[in-house]
Length: 106
Image (cartoon, rainbow, N blue to C red; front, side, top):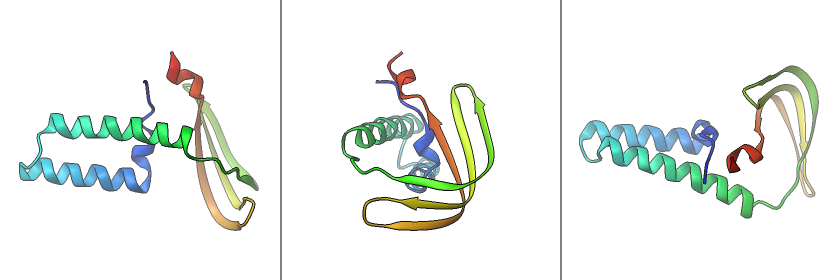
């Protein structure tokens, strides 16, 4: 299964990367094993989002910037309103990165 490395820039991905770096520097983990852990993290995040997330969210806001490069869309919204069935949340500024999942099967 091919994966994107996008989720490494999430909060949990950054924490995992920092922890693995620390463990490699302390000598408790080899660099090769740290890379294997990150690859497994990418696979697990992709699978979990495909199979376990069922909710839908609508987003409205002012489109500040958009870009399409290397089959990746990047949107920066200001004053965004996120809505789902139960909740709504205002966010001052949000960056959305979207990739075509069909590219994973190639």
